[in-house]
Length: 234
Image (cartoon, rainbow, N blue to C red; front, top):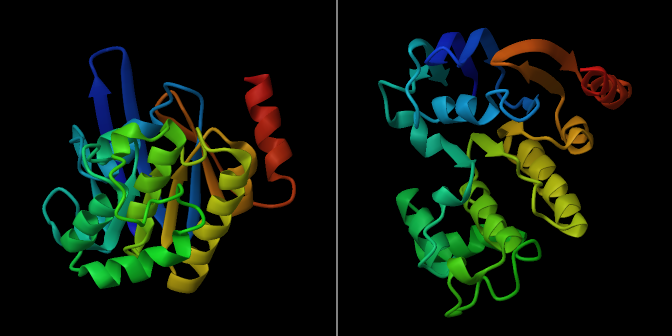
């Protein structure tokens, strides 16, 4: 599914404004967004998901205006932070809830989650009494990420998916994201500080600086060095 941004503006008084005149992400494309803290990355993702209203401009997902339609929501998976979790549920209860929202019965939910079992914390698919709130930050994050992926969305939006994950889990997540993109054709939109992971996964990368996209790069073997040099000099 295609994501289109036109004439987007979000102002926060006189202190900061996010302004993106145009951004188009084609169906099946893997797109990365990088930038320093405070650049506006999470604000942008919240606007994409209709969690925050822009002052002007439009977001379209598969030609649906996100602010005027709910149809796109069943096609999109997302995980931005722990507020996306229901922490008084066990992981299995949470997956069952998410699956039911997307029209899956419990058996379908378990079937779809099985490929993610080795990525999840131990016991996540059992009738454990361990609640999400009792998991470590990294393990709780794994639950949220898998909940956004097992539904096989046409668009997946993730904010800092590699943060708080151990090295083995980071490597596993890269593989899972690439498989979802290749097997299901999912459009990936990933915001991250991890330049190495983003350049490995994403075929196209935008640099956000002070609320504006200042550079777009088609990923090549030179991209990581180019980005490192850009941020080192900045």
